[in-house]
Image 1 (tube, rainbow, N blue to C red):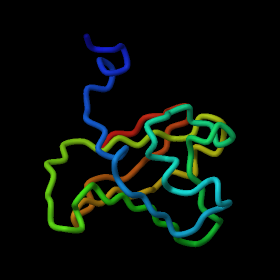
Image 2 (cartoon, rainbow, N blue to C red; image 1 turned 135 degrees about the vertical axis):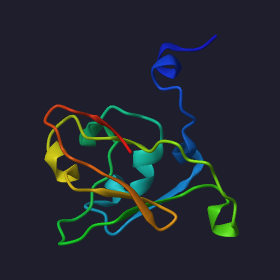
Image 3 (cartoon, rainbow, N blue to C red; image 1 turned 120 degrees about the horizontal axis):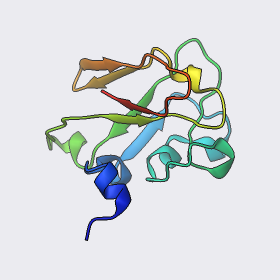
Image 4 (cartoon, rainbow, N blue to C red; image 1 turned 45 degrees about the vertical axis):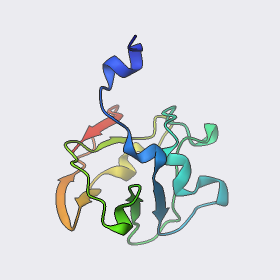
Length: 117
């Protein structure tokens, strides 16, 4: 039986079993790995968001299982879940890259949480 959440998001979440890194951690508890745990509460204080320090350029990377060993994946969609508690506009202009090619850019919309590239 398919759960309601699976019906709404029929994608395989490869991120959950992956490795994430970011250019800096605002605090240790806001590291990149908490953003890929599958929890989408969208609240920093609930531990489901990562956060970098304020810098001119921030990066966030996801390494799929085995990708550093040459394993390739067919990726049809990249879903980004934005924060719900505040500061959602910080995602504006974020670029999504796959294998060295940009496949999307976030155009922030107030109140929007899910971005699809």
